[in-house]
Amino acid sequence: MAERTKAGDSKSLERVHARSAGSNPAPSATISISMPQEKLFLELLPKAVDITDNSKEVKKGSIFFAIKGTKFDGHTFLGEVLKKSPLAVVVEKSYKPPKGLDFSSTHLIKVENTRKSFAKACKEFFGKPDERLKMFGITGTNGKTSTSHILAQLLENSGCPTGIIGTVEYRLGSKIYGKGQTTPHPKVWFKTLTQMLLDGAKAVSAEISSHALDQYRIYSTNFEGVVFTNLSQDHLDYHQSMEEYYLSKKRLFTDYQYKVGITNIDNPYGRRLFQEIPNLVSFGKSPDAHYRILDYSLTLEGSKVYLQLPDKRKVVLEIPLLGEFQIYNTVGAFALLHTLGWNLNDLLEGIKNLKPIPGRFEVIQIGGRTVIIDYAHTPDALDNLLRSVKKLQRGGRLITLFGAGGNRDKTKRPLMGKVASKYSDILVITSDNPRWEEPQEIINHILEGVNSNIPTVVEVDRRKAIKRAILEISQEGDIIVIAGKGHEDYQEIKGIKYPFSDRQEVLKLKEETQDWL
Image 1 (cartoon, helix red, strand yellow):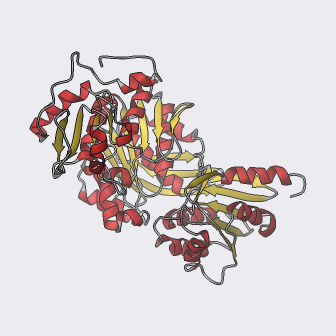
Image 2 (cartoon, one colour):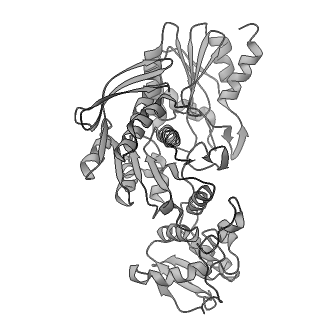
Image 3 (cartoon, helix red, strand yellow):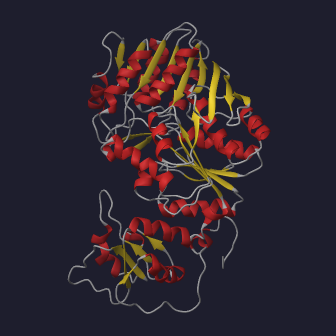
């Protein structure tokens, strides 16, 4: 790169791409970009002061990408953009400028897909950081966060400083770069990769969401390895069908470069992926899995897994994480790194030393009761969680507290009620980020699937629900599962995110009741 400065220098990150001396090239007529003509675009990019897909961020000398989103179409803001003297404007090939728009003082570049072009431009603008990092991508409905954290810990244990990008936060060591979307906007994605690279990262373990794949947020990223954890019902408000949802996930294995791809063939969609994509490596209990789970035992301290390797050798994984689902997440991460040639003994030792994942099967003891906090917010995740809890139950009752997110897939709500009824002795139905919907309406949808024979308490206020579950409903020896939010530190209601943490609420109750509960 032409310019290198201290880590954390934001100005250096905005200008980390190579610059050419001299003035901007003179504006010309429309430039249509096909693959052979892409050099024309790349010649302009190093001279740009910034690149953006937000019309409000455009300034003189920047390049604006007009993207058609789910709510807004960037092409409709070109009048506003042109007033700010951009270096270039990139539009879809089908775009026809309305009368009155004057592009004579800028470059109008037409491309097949502005989303793809914007992601590729971000990669170039921030110095192609993915090509200097070992990039690992994890996709699936459930298990992305745990698998990415497990993978990062195993890499760190093997002496490879590793950044994490995902649902909880974007982090390298103790440094937090931000949080928000599971897989961020293209500019944030490549900028964060560059920041981590400059701060000493050698690898990045990232959660890759179906939305990000569908919207090409990480397009052109090169990966060392990719993992498919599973697929079950979620996000059908966006994808409309399970087939569309699956095909979005599949893009990580068809549209990106990677050395090794791993899939869970115990999951029907994971097996389908294995059958459709050549040379994938499989894991699971299935007899034909490359990394075959032969047997395992679960305790409140973790699990012991007997695993057969592709060469038929057998190893034992001692996993200090709770929950049957963490067996799959750990085996998936192990299989990827072992296939890539990382040292077997280092990996086995790293697994022994795994630290808990934020908001994933977090256990808090309070007054003879066991409280388990978990992010499970889909029918399948809730099933996996409660099934694991039942295997650990030693007397006492299982009380499950949960809700469902507003303005999201409504069809999964009664399914969650049905799943919770299957395992629980008592249900507490409450709110979980109702967003713009009425909380009681969401609860009513959940109740449609609840077994009427299961004692059920409805409490819209989540704080009160937690308090009632622990102080009024539970008895000594009971297990109380609080599902849905996990690591989240907010409750989203009517467009406002109010500070709220399941974990903090439980710890507060523990402190308040330590003398009498």
